[in-house]
Amino acid sequence: MPNDLKVSIANCLIGGEEITMTGNMGIKDVININVDGKKIQLRQHADVINGEKPERKNAPYTSTEAIIQEVDESGVEAAELLIQRICWMLSFACTCRVIPYAYEYPADSGKKRVNSITTPARFFRPTFELTEGKNIRQFIEQCFPNYKQLEKSRKLRSVIDYLSQAEVKGQLMEVRSILSFITLENLKHSYANSKGYAFVGNYFRKTTGKATKKTPKYFFSDLATEMLNEVGMPAPASNIYSLRNELIHSGLSSLTFHEQLERYEDVHDLIREYLLRLLGYKGAYTPYAFNRRGNVINIT
Image: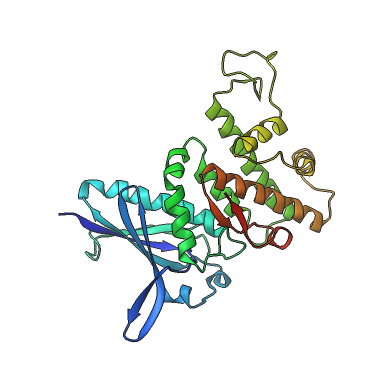
């Protein structure tokens, strides 16, 4: 008879969608997700719902208990992979690494495997309004099939991790910018590979057949523009390229901190929108530079 798999998750600072009643008191702490033929319940710890600020502690924060229902013993590994994928999507939603670190099967049996984690919780400019669990559920249920399909070929775990690493406190602005450009390079490279473009002489070539060094080549801007156009986005602003080139060739930027911060925000927003469109998301999200772009943007 199938049992449930219980998973402890850290750093998932989201609200719930459904209310749990205890006597006369209620707390909106539960999100029920249906993906990949499985039912997953996320239950948030009360401290998260009640406004605890764990990011101030600069340490991992146990935030969530997940239950994957009706898992056969032969399906435990697949269920663990399922929750790991959901947590990567949550990491993108939260702009912070959300990590499953303890697995117990059957649930409440005491047979638990626990992994050590060090990544601290953070709450800063998330992709969605996190207090509403409905936003998170809709994003995961809507985009999980595409995420699963593209995770390996587009190296989505690495992309999401780089975006999260760029937000670590205390880094030089140049370091944050470089991480964002590495993320964009990663996406561009995996896009070209997914199209089957030949790679000769350190350049992708404008052919999927046999190529030589004389075959027309893709420059960074060409390939990035093609990649963005495919999901309905315009070419990046030229000032993004100028900062990228300056950092690659000198390691430092001549821009003021404020100017460089704006460029960083622009790249982060470009990647954020691209990933949402790539995953097939339809609905509202929050831009990284909300102070310049508004609190909500809709993808239709």
